[in-house]
Amino acid sequence: MTEVIPRFGEDSLALIFQGQNVNNPQMGKLLDKFVAAKKVYDLATEILDFDVRRVCFGNLTHLQEDPEYVQPAIVTTELAEYRAWQDFTDGAKTDLITGLSLGMYTALAAAGSAEDATVIDISSKRARLVARNAKRRPGGMLSIKGIPHQEELDDLIKKTKTAVAIWWGGHGLVTLSGTRQRISEAYGIASGLEGVTAEISKVKEAAHNRIQERIQKPLTEVLEKAGLLPPEVALLSNDPRKNETAFLESVEELIRHYSDQMVEPVDMNEVNEEIALSGIARVLEIGPDRSFGLTSQLVRKCREEKISEMREQMGRGAIKRVKFDFDSLSA
Image (cartoon, rainbow, N blue to C red):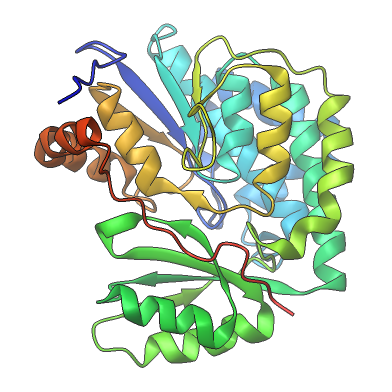
């Protein structure tokens, strides 16, 4: 059996920035009293063409359903929380950084690849592209928990021609993406399965879906002009399944990954395994709702219960990788 050598030591720490759907009314309101966080909101106010504090701190749920406003608002709140955490810990050392979908933009700042101002700016430009595309091809996302068998999930995807957007492996969590009509159909089927809970995202967007192909080129141009730098900290792709290397190391890799993730799924099962096998001892989630992804709990479970089994399977080259038809399109 090939030995798996952990990349990080016993005191190592990973940060995971959350993605869309972690937003909630008044998110970040309590942060604004901390100097480090307040600076981030002040910066965002200068950059964005809307009142970010009003969107974040108020009860404007209609704006929190519009990707043009909610996406940069989430990124700003995550940056504020991260800078406040840094201030509280006197700049605690981070060994690995990754993000769940939109959280990869906050990760750019935490990894030293971009200034906070740049991250806010490019997340806003990305959001405008997404919002514009959503008017042309309205889409949506559906979160499902507790689907009992792989066959039922495969059947659901086949019947509704939706695509897997975010996959949580054997933890019974999956997010589907597609046109609004097909997401509605998938919701109806999933809700009828015993023991299954399903929830349609309020944000009017179909992330990680071929619907977003139209914005890949302009987004790439935005990223190319942003002056990104190679990460100073290990930056883990949120789709390690696809990459030759799980860690993004060059500017070229960053641009390709951030463009591709508009149409490619997020494979959190692979992310959790990569974190566990890398030897990370602690995981801190940052975002408006840190209970949303359950990432810390899942990674800890991987480390405590699965790491020996994964190492053994890895040595035999037999780690099971769940494969879906990620290119399933929404007409």
